Amino acid sequence: MKKALKITGIVVGVLVLLVIVLAVTLPFLINPNRFKDDIARAVKEKTGRELVIQGDIKLSIFPWLGVQIGPAELSNAKGFGAVPFAAINETDVHVAFWPLLHKRVEVGEVKLDGLSLDLEHDAEGRSNWQDISEHMARNAAAGKPASAEAGSGGAVDLSVAGVSVTDSQVRWTDAQKHQQYTVSDFTLKLGAFSSGKPLSLEAGFDFTGTNPALQGHADFKGTATADLEGRIYSADDATLELQAKGDKVPGGQVDASLHWQHAVANLAQGSVALNGLEADAYGLKLQMEAQGKDVTKAQNVAASGGLDFQPRLAQIFLVEEGTFADEVVDISKFQQFVVTILIVVAYTATAVQWISNHGTAQSVTSLPTISTALLTLFGISHGAYVVGKAPTSAGDPPLSIQTRNRDREDFLVQKRSAG
Image (cartoon, rainbow, N blue to C red; front, side):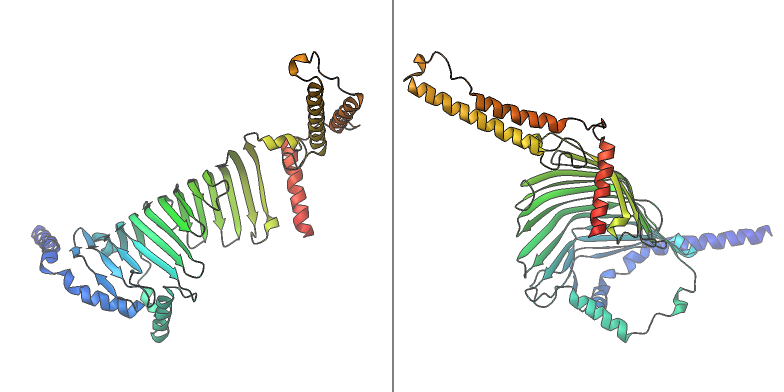
């Protein structure tokens, strides 16, 4: 028995050693660059486009089955110029060897460097990816439907250690609208992910555009979860920061940030929820909570929150309390302001005339007295303002912020229902 175990151990050891030797030597014995033409023909058959692999293809077998491809380009559609539809500087993908024997696909970090996409609409409204979709649809129609037995071997456990995209860009051109927008210096970092498990996400990019002119930078960081089977998608502890300036940006430029603690969308039930939202832009700070079901109808979404902002000069004319505080003009305030300005202008004109009648300012020993009519007008104006601010006979106190927000929401709901 011992001898049999010893022989078995030797055989297993030899097989393992043989696998290791093959894994080390095969990349040197097989030149993967010989398959460039075969790969190009397969891509041509599937998409109708020309693939040119300019760099070398490198293989590894143990402990990772991997491929690294140098610069490559996919041709553009006919009529869209010589700029490649897609190009990439380097692609690196590896899959762990041993887990494959147990029907587990463990992909290492997928690295894409120097990815460039050119998306266009021509003057006739045709897109430069439309032909790919049509070509693939024709192939699917002409081919045999996938066999139900293809997946009879059982489900495959798939996991990916992460995705890294660096130094990439996307260009969008619309010849009909004479617009061009570019996302450049794009970076994306995804953590390990699989269905239903949290995924860390971090991205940043610059952007520019014409017609209207626009430029700026955006950063995003957060954790996302995608339950593909249950169709539930969420994002937690997420922050979006945006700096932009351009012709159509309100105020010419904006520096804004958006943060939320938890956001979830259940597409199967048509429900959404948003918790701990904080937005900051133009000196305004917004805090909000929201939730709803059957979100295709706006009235089914409920939200609550408060707005905190720096005082503005225009507020001196706005209502201070009630449902529409800081939103509509207070007539009594505005009336008081106008009357006060008229009185000041009238008195200034009277004083100027008084000095003119005396010849020089040095000869003026006193200023003109204010007429009874002006004083009466001033008294009426301020008296009306005070009366307007007086409490009701019931002595109702001013509305609180919470009551004001509730009344405003009730008003908006009634307005939507009436419409």
